[in-house]
Image (tube, rainbow, N blue to C red; front, side, top):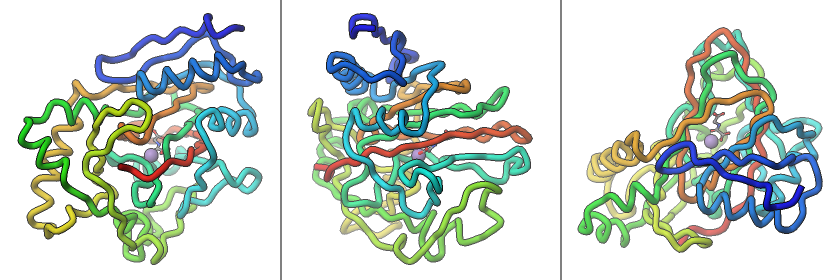
Length: 286
Ligand code: OGA
Ligand code: MN
């Protein structure tokens, strides 16, 4: 199959497109690889249906975009340490849900991931969709005064709410049956990032904050920061900045973690959902 057979179909106004005409299990030609990269820059999150990928194949797909980022705190697969199993068992009911707060991945790092590849090994019969938002569209819709104010600001990020020494997952009851999350004092440290980052491929500006890892603005206490952050989160997740993807077994998503947030919906109690994720290394936000 040549690159010309690849077609993209947007699934919403703000972001997200399904890509058809490609079998990701085959070795890809250079034009195909370039078409997939362009599709991600254009749509921010891209989806492929009915793929049949081995773990090695999944790692190769991530390799289109860069090196691998090894996820801390979450136990990886024993056989493939660069892949994490994201699984909610039927018996987890609705008590546990990985990714169920709006976020972009691992922004507590100096160099947060460029993106992630998420592959569905088993979808529930209904529910378990993932939502995404376009953080560049959210930024663009702010007033000029707000944009200028935020342009000069820095935010402090940390894994502490989730993975820190007093974080959510220190309570064993919050763990899923089949996932193992290991919080530690490593999760407590703070990392500075610009509140507005410029995408290195497109040069678009986007908001780079999220309610799970952003703690406050640099130079402002929590009481001052939180109302502004809350406004920005409510603004960013407005429906017109979103898309929503319904998983089927064999579907694969690749998102650009630099200009989006995502959220996994916990609405399939009593059913199993099993995903594999490979995370792509990124660079320092600027
Ligand atoms: C993730 C994540 C969402 C989902 O893999 O980073 O947040 O829907 N997953 O499984
Ligand atoms: Mn995530």
